Image 1 (cartoon, rainbow, N blue to C red):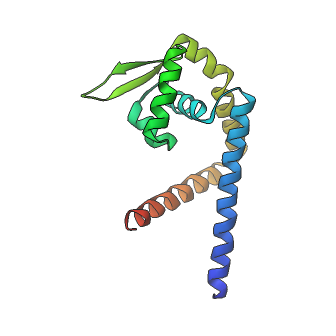
Image 2 (cartoon, one colour; image 1 turned 60 degrees about the horizontal axis):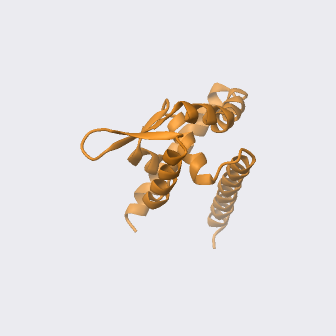
Image 3 (cartoon, one colour; image 1 turned 45 degrees about the vertical axis):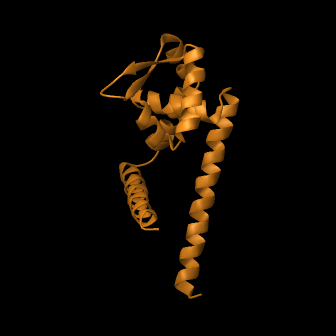
Length: 148
């Protein structure tokens, strides 16, 4: 293996470990807040979309399997945390109820607050570089995976 490939491999390993450790911290946050990972992801995604989000968008944005998403949404509906509303065609919106808004304030909105505090502590340039590189990586990765 060339020195260049070794350096790239080390950076890739470092990046992947950071991504996995970050995911583990989100899991820890969910546990501390009394939520399962799937419920936390759903509420987080809905909150990031002003309390209403298409079911398909939650699946895509949260990176969840449809079966997992549907099971969790049914649970949230039974607990009166969300309700479904018809959209165009077969599409459905997942909307927070008042109970869901209160639950979100006590849980996922705290996570979003922490994220915002961290990003606010960075310079504008650091935030722009962070997002730009993350988007660039995701776009390239997605394109290469499609070609597998």
